[in-house]
Length: 368
Image (cartoon, rainbow, N blue to C red; front, top):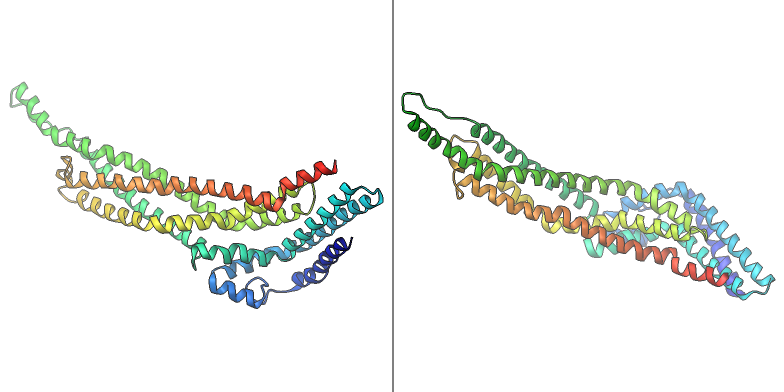
């Protein structure tokens, strides 16, 4: 009984003292109401995070009264269950009420210490993996750089294909002064260079352009996906998740929403920034070199002769572009698949921990 009273007093103390102060404060520390010691720690390890935490404070301050109300309702429900257990002398009901009081205490910590938890989970801990690099700025910059270089290469390939198609469509004919057999033989000889150009230049150029276009579309999708979740994770997932967690029927849903917000808000950008940091610069350099060589060999007077054999300059350059495309597709499609798998595992584990789905079902079974 003494333990229950202590838990209730601690929860009420958090709600009545820290809650109103948090709601009325203006966040003068510049790091989202963090204590000066914690703010200096975060600034030293992850200086990019304090502006983000300040923005979280601005979002969270609007919903803090709802969080406090949810805590109060959660405490009331747990207290009623506990009192029923005492009145009816039912140990199972009383234990269930005790568990709910502890859950209310945990929800109060999440609600009232939300900014501090965010700073530790999203700022301090990720700094050990990403260093003093803003995962948002790094991932978005590298993705946009890759898009620019891929579009530049696509423009060079498109210009080469357009010019080559125009030349290959030319039908060379000689006059009728020669015999019929001689005319046909000479016309065939004249068409050989154009035929070779169609074999060694046009087909690979077209296929590489298609692969590039698909990869560029995927990159734009990843780019705007990161931007969307950077703005939507807090108000759409984390804040409603904290509120849902305060109630018994929706606790597992709340844990799931919090885990989704955490995964999309920081885990996904960190993994994108790490993956692109180690691979994107080399791919971009390959694209830059390939585009400049294609422009060199396809925009002068000898661009037809540069593609008349398998080892000609233009054909060799396009063959090199195909090898760069392999790394490009690995970056664009394999890494997102791996990131999705990691995010899924993270969501499952964290939602089970925060939402207590397994513990919740066990308590309900014991109550029944």
